[in-house]
Length: 369
Image 1 (cartoon, helix red, strand yellow):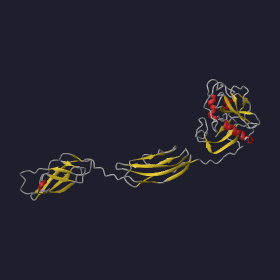
Image 2 (image 1 turned 90 degrees about the vertical axis):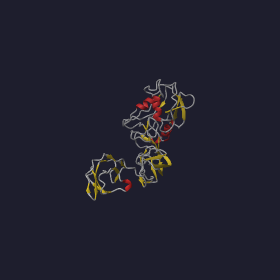
Image 3 (image 1 turned 30 degrees about the horizontal axis):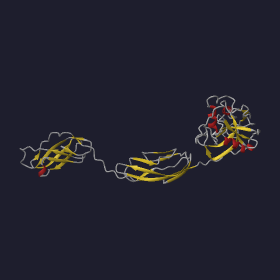
Image 4 (image 1 turned 180 degrees about the vertical axis):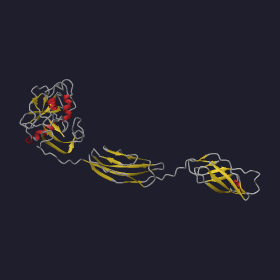
């Protein structure tokens, strides 16, 4: 017996003694379904074959055959051998075709994007790809082709190519995505009391890197910082303005401090974590880190040179009463390496001073948020 996914060919033999009257047709009983089918006698060239159709793929069948002639109906044959039809051949797959739900989008950083979804108009798509890779904060599904998420990094308009692929071929579509700087509405003004209980002395709407790692996610809320706040000197939980030596290690350079806005926290941690006395109590760095302020916050630090200069520039909005030299957390980048930068709150002059100066300079902790 031969068979396909939807049919079978039954081989038959006719008893040599039963040749008086030609067979008119056969009754084929499908023992699997219980259906009996009338099949006309095959052409003379195929007297030994009967074709059965309309079978189901991947199904086992057995049959019996009864011959019918002018003389009457023959005895029913024995049950045929079992036939299991194979898989149906796969239907041809059309070439993929699709459109995106949008062709472009511009979104501010840290704002949820609309992105796009796929509208397939051709053959079923097995997988998707995007090039270049989805930007920070966004994700792309290789299964559905959806582009979703919240972008976190500012980026110029970028054209992304989306490719859908199946066994027959592939198709492409493009999407232009732009990430602009987050728009921050000022919650505080210069001179306002900030969340740490001190007064605001610096604001940047575009934001700046900050925090322990001086990164774009270093603020207390996980993004960039926008404000600098100085420790209070007259309000509740005030800071006592006094002179301090810079560090307990006066003979070695840290070598990694920065002068930039927002870098003071990282600088101060480098000071207090320096071996050989960096964590000595009662120094400019350690005293700044130990300060908690009126609201018991733990992220106060010694300002960098640029931060200290901003505090000087906005001294009239502060409660500063000492017009003398103040330490920054920025080392001198030139010789000698064992000196640090400071600034006069009398005339704004900037200079360096040796870390070994026991008299030291005044300290005013700040924080960024």
